[in-house]
Image (tube, rainbow, N blue to C red; front, side, top):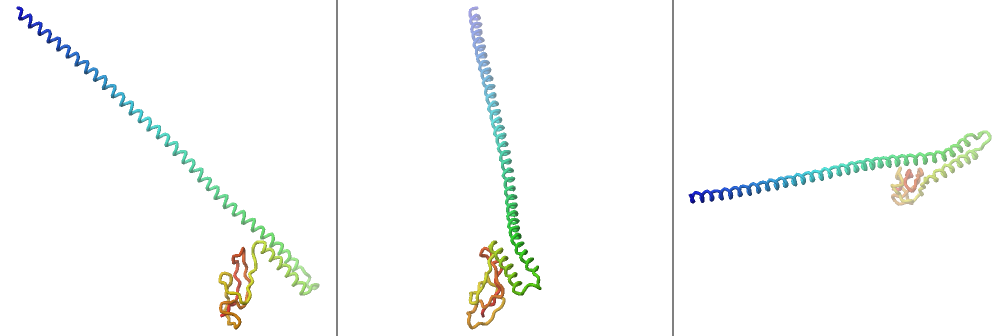
Length: 204
């Protein structure tokens, strides 16, 4: 009887130990489950934060691109305006210069009108010649005001292909080869550049 009682008590103690172990295991599992949920929540929060940062950077870059595009369009428009104004200013300058030349030439034309209005019955050849000389001098002064000068070549001058045009070659006892023998037509310079070369004959 006593042995059976002892067996029952031992069995009861084993059941209690097993129950306690089962309870400990359940607590551990519950703790692990709670820890796993926390880790998963943290991971999701980190991912969402990263995505939000990427979205913000994308929006910022989009704004910068839009701003740069606007600046580029404005710069292009400004450049086109500068080109347009430059062309207009050049055209205006040429027009004003042409008007100045025309006004001065009108004065020369007035002198011609006076010359042809002379009564030939009451004028001598000298009067006509004097009138022509007045017109010629006025024309030369007009040309000089615009930087145009007469290029006169003297016999013995060295032939310069940049300012002279050889119309013929002729023998000469007094001049060396390639020297100007005679000027056939005067040349003209504009601001020291050849406007029209002087036509000359050159010694052989």
